[in-house]
Amino acid sequence: MRLLTHSVHVAVIYLWVSHLQRNRYLHYLHFSLEAMALSRSSGAVRRFFWSRGNPVVDKATKLIEANPCVVFSKSTCPFCDMAKSVLLNDLKAKVHVMEIDRELSGDEMSALQDHFLKTTGARSVPRVFIEGNCIGGGTDVAALAERGELKDMLVKAKALEELCREEPCSLPGKLSMSSHHVFSTTGLAQTKDHKQNGSKITAEHLEREKPDA
Image (tube, rainbow, N blue to C red; front, top):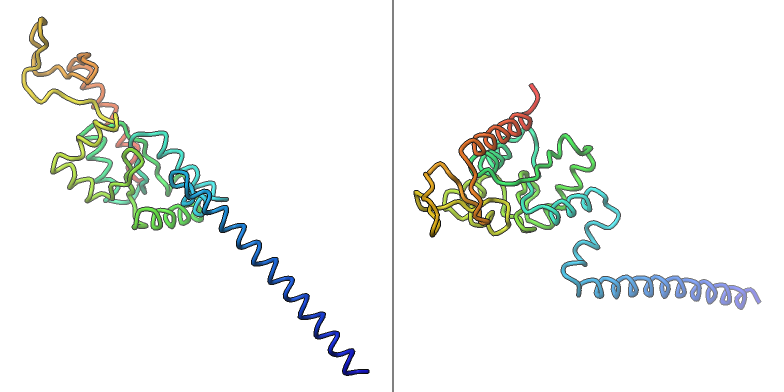
């Protein structure tokens, strides 16, 4: 009788464990099918795994999608200063700069850099994005600028007005403009005063980006 009771208990326990394993398998299968469905829509599976429940990654993703050029920076990083100087001072590009050491908590900053490691192959900053694509860090930006490729990328992304390469600039049927006039792709002239004002704004912006003493 005792042997029979023991056998019944063992059978009940076996069925209970099998039921748990079956439920766990079904849950895993459902999750896998959901991920496969998401993978069919423009990189959604990547965002599903890496940004689900992570507000700071969602915030960074929205910034990248909403701006032609974004720099994720740290205010005390010399390589970040290098990238910002090339983009803002040398090329006067339209750049959204996010100083992660000032705008995020320690945990948020770590989570965002972990996300960069998974998506760009590097955890370090700066992480520079043009048209949603990461072009690298400070030395990469400087190298692209040296080869003349960075300017073309910014013009294509509409983050930089395309300047006349010829001097002086002229329009058919119009008076020839002197070299201190700058033409955008829309054909509107900006005066030297406008350029000086733009340089002043850029200098003030860079001053704000310097680390606190």
